[in-house]
Length: 337
Ligand code: SF4
Image (cartoon, rainbow, N blue to C red):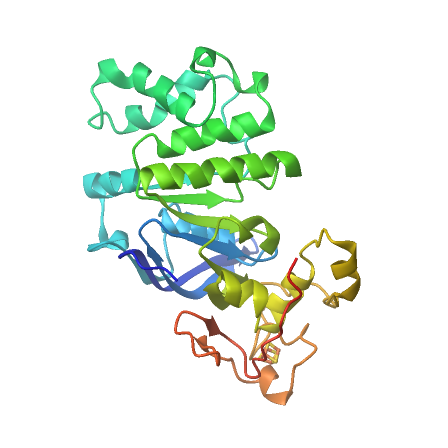
């Protein structure tokens, strides 16, 4: 259970994108990418955010860095109301909340050397460090993320995928942020390399006291790094809880389905496990189902599910940090992997 002070407080975050059609580009609807998301992130904590593609998790990550302006809701970083800041105050705030992007193949400029890439944050925030110290700090950062500082003049194509993600992480931590948004940082990497990057993020967290929002599309990736996990479906959090609550006693049917798909290495255990295969596709976020958004795919749905949206409420296991959005929450003991 998180114990540190709340460093990031998101309340009812909403991001709707207008759908424009016709010659005069009339607004004919909205894509509800993020639709009322609230959570606290504590100092030094890792919050995993998991869901299928299109559930709004990456948009949420970008909203936390204000790379997307909100349609509604509020975000506080400590005492600061993030969305009311502008100009120099917002730039100052950006030092404290940084992001590592998903794809190390496209997020690094192929024409720039590693040194040029990692020095960029100092160029954007020139008052952070005297100019004559930039180069030495870049070498330190490369060393910190497990890269050879002697390779400072190499280009991204001269590195492997995992090494490129380390370059992105070096850039992300250059300004000593308090919060690092990790937007699917290992999805584009081989499984064997994923573990190395996750281990690196864990050791950096211990060393630097960072808080992470770690976005991923499946539960297995976030398990070892997350203190708590938020499961998203069609723009909303449907369940949030700690490791045991999400992995050992998943309560929302969608979490149960995701959990049942987590690979189990032991064939004997795998044989006992009931895999829940969801029927149908994720509905369009431009036209989400009424009532519970999951009801079109939920095997437990009843009449009320199609008409009344369930609130995200404290789960019946009595743990205040465990919340579930379901009219019929039912604890399902998972077979531990
Ligand atoms: Fe399924 Fe109904 Fe719960 Fe939604 S509210 S997850 S449809 S049982």
